Amino acid sequence: MAVQAAVALEQTRRGEEIRRLRSTRDDGSDPGARLRLEHLLHLDERLMGAMAGSTAEAAGVFAVLAESVGHPLSLHDPSGALRTGRRLLTPEELAGWRLRSAVRTSQQAGGVAIAHLPGGGTYALLAITTAGEHLATLVMEGADDDAVARLAHASAFMTVALLVERALAQADEAAQTTLVEELVDSRVPPRPTLGSRLAQYGVSPDAPATVLVVDVDPAGAVTAARAVRGLDGAGRWLVSVHDGHVCVIAAGPTGPGCAGPAAAPLVADGLAAAGTPALVGTAHSPSGGPSDLRRAHTEAAEIAAAARALGRTTGHADFASLGAVGAVIRDRTGTTSREIVGRHLGPVLDYDRRRRTRLAETLWHWFAAGELLAPAADALSVHPNTVRQRLERVDDLLGPDWRTPEGRFHLHLALRLHRVTGPDRGADPAADPGAVVAGR
Image 1 (spheres, rainbow, N blue to C red):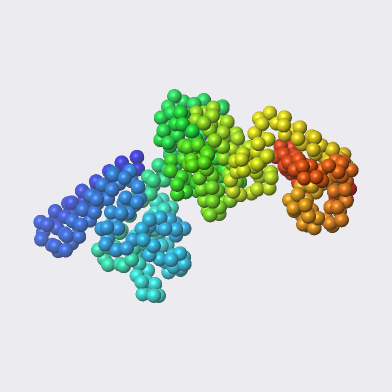
Image 2: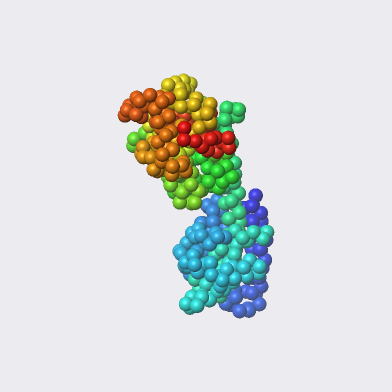
């Protein structure tokens, strides 16, 4: 609709320009003005062709304009980040008061503003705006009259291209959200067109897929999803906010030599670089069908939650990277986890519940500190003697066998499983205002 409206307005304007050109020809006035008008009409034709040929992408319009003005040109988003073109100015120069003032002047006056830098450089700046919203800024090196006129002439085309780009991106986000809901939410029945719509993103009901659950702050989930879509290598991934986290579905299995494993580090590292640290859980789906993807999505969410319960805050994880914990929690019934916790840690947990002590927490920090008293005491904010006394109480409860290598392995595993699957999901007992900080 935006393109059609722009075409209609442009045809009206072109009619006025053609009438002016004919009038100039007939009255024999300034031939230079006639030539400039012909150049602008030719630029119109090329810009309209660029919009029609590239679905109004700003890059296509920018390429035509850059060639026409004959000067180095760049397009920046409102924050000053380079979108396309040559980097003509450093971020510090763009943030300087001269250029910021020129951009404000262009926004308010609706035309090109000229800025002269102390080093001698001259730049023409054009703020692309609509309804008072700053969409982008065009920066051109040099400021001769003909190039400035062409820059200003292309403002409407660039505005429409940017608006259409945004509308298409929003429509694609909505389409991806609908697809993800159909795939991973059992309450949403898949529509008959599911297969053809999945094919647009390279996912097939008959081919393996990788599912990522990006565990982020729910308030920043939308921003994180857009950052994932913008990652180099994201390709045609399905990306959507779902149930407070970001869900990513990509064609290809997880496994050595497959594309799947690359997705998780790409997302985790990309979000960290963008200032949005996240924990990514990864699972493999043997097919892109709804039932397999739902199972994989559930697994990926459990992996992310387990990794966070074990103390991780960033990076990526799958069942294998969780080691013995991953192998045990993959047991869907949870029976194995409960039996291991009960057998190797049960007496300690019972003692903590009855006496409101912190023996389990002390063991956790003691293992995390490499079985050293001093760092464990620092983590618990107690004296090392207190840690020693608590470990002696564990001796009384579990017997001396827990100190053997095999006993320590089983106890540590039980602690990790308890943090992942226990009722407190790894909560710090110190957060309980009724907990007693005692030596025994």
